[in-house]
Image (cartoon, rainbow, N blue to C red; front, side, top):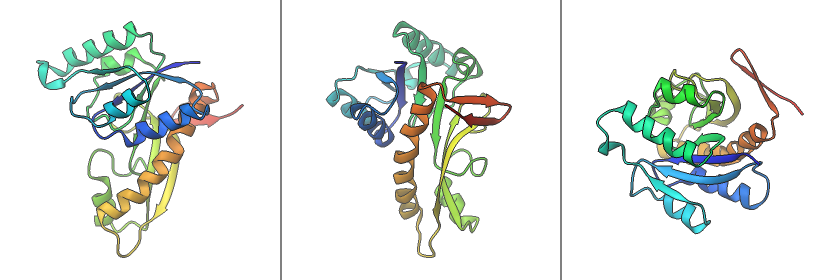
Length: 201
């Protein structure tokens, strides 16, 4: 099975969904390492409870993004990681980092890409008057939130929605499609052709 590393910055909600899928035998890979750029990230406790090795690499201790990324690459390579999963990792990765893991970086983003890349996606969807919103799992490229899309899920935007209410409904869909997309990748079912991802057997 492919060895996976999950990068986090916060509470680890999507990490929890990935761990649950692994424990159920339906993830397709083994989470060998969880790395956070914040020592207080709640997701670290989730990983430790599941018996998964954790490491903290605080970006504030590095003089540049490139040095942080180079150190992170060394850590991942030392653990012989095959695929890197970004689950709420609030760092923009350098082109060198992306190039080191070609087609082996997977991210979950809380919008229907290519709409609303970056932060504050739920507020942006409401401000734009969207009738539908959702989430996307995609391969990571050097361009922020612009990589080939593996899977998406759609939720309706309700008249009474706040950013928090909309985020909560989108998060349920993230927990559903993220483990499935990771499994497809681990099982070799994904083929990238240009900017399209084809799912096969």
